[in-house]
Image (cartoon, rainbow over all chains, first blue to last red):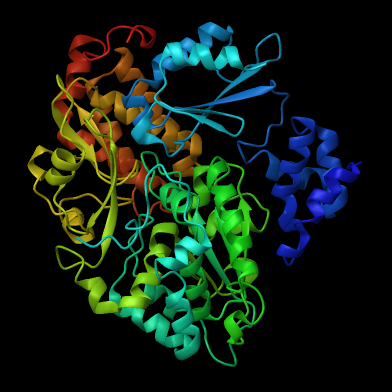
Length: 154
Length: 431
């Protein structure tokens, strides 16, 4: 069941669309914001509200890379690996992140603090390499800067 | 030099709020249009201005608007959508406009909506642009409170409201029909065309989808006229353009310059030339899905026609520079890996062809490449090209590949002979 809070946040968007199924992506984002990721129960909850089957909702959820269908860490690191960041050395940053966290891309650290995922171009190319954690963007990355950022995150 | 898109932006300062925007003449074009113009007249000015879409395809904006059914028998539900899904690798221009002068975009959207008589508008914003989201949401509230959005705008009888839709990722959402599916809450698969969105779009209703930079040009065009706009370009083409440069140059960044500014001037003057110790080898002129240009093209005017004549596309106008210490094969591998990952999977050539291209390139980089691979890659750039796939994604994906094969063939061969990458022999961690 959706919580009252989740339902309220989804319903706030209802007047903006002529059909409520249009809210599918928004509803998934709302649920993910509260629960951290979208498990099968979340699919059923969203589906129940939007009059869609669990599988219809899943077909949408699995398309979008920012809807997490697996449990993620408290901080999801989205490291840009597109061309400008590549030219400016994002591979080196990626190796540094993997070594520091002891994980590969797509994995979550044992302490549940970090998940490492790639992301297409963050539109920060003049300050490459870049990454995003939560709503925050980090530019002109160096291994030292990455260490500092990791330390500051609980 | 006139800079209608950025003249009022102070880098480092907070975005222009409604009062600051109005002090720069903001919303005057909208007031004029609602007071004294017919919707069709607005479309006509934009047609006359020869404004071409700044999102990458370069279609004439006014012509697009003119395809929308008008008059009493036209559907009453129509939609005006801003494509703010900026995700073309190497592109960072729309973000700047949205985060610095959001009302310019809103005014452009309202004018466009008035021209096609659409009561509802959406901004389709990529999920990762959190600051843009905050700035736009605030600007929309301000515009509503001031009566520039809502019922009976400025007592004109025209109703329009704009909703901000934030996406959940995937590059393909920038394709306008995939974007419409995403707005409807579906998987972002491109639609069959025709019919085109101006006739059958969002929920089957006439819909215009325009890029952020395109729409930011509308208020100044309506205010100053089509001839003024045409006079801004250096070549035959009209207006200014946000050009960007990233890569190993001294001053990566973005500048509003007359359309048709030469490539050399952009790279050498504005971007400050190559960093010490690096030489220019080539450039992808307009985001990931455009063909490489090389040294012989440096004097090319960067406008739609000239770049096309040189075998590439102006695209988004934000270029990525390849230097002499970066492997062209590695760069193309990075691009094709991106495209393989982002393919929506709907049509076979794209879904299966791009991962194949990626694997071949990977193999070459690792030293497993063979002479035959060149032919195989050529074949892929042909069979994933225009007319062979469901949408323009795969044809765009093979543009950097086919041009790399043309200009950097020697580099491919050096990988075969040396059994590995001559540029990056050590693992990534050591670079």
